Length: 140
Image (cartoon, rainbow, N blue to C red; front, side, top):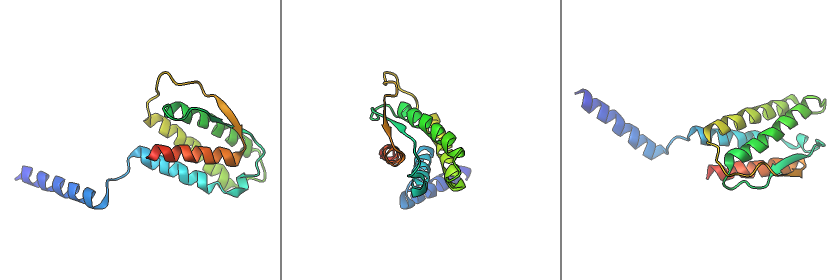
């Protein structure tokens, strides 16, 4: 009797997953949250006078690429904490991005043979666009 009940529950679960789509993995949830937080930073951050660096090689070395972006987000966080013109909402978004980048790095194993972060200086809008595009490519 118990085996029949367990089998029935598993069957219902499989049917519901098929009908409604599989739930997102923790990695996909984190990526989606990061992308939304980057979009929420808004245009008020575009005027910040700070050069941030983006990595050259992002194809095979996701962990190292995330590490490069994380270092720059820490720099951004320190910079905007001292700015009076930056809204508290943006400071909170940057902190969330930092926390979620670290969480994402914990979910992805580092690879060997990857280059050390070689970087290109970008203004904030370009940096945000490149990070967002990289995160979107990880969702695929």
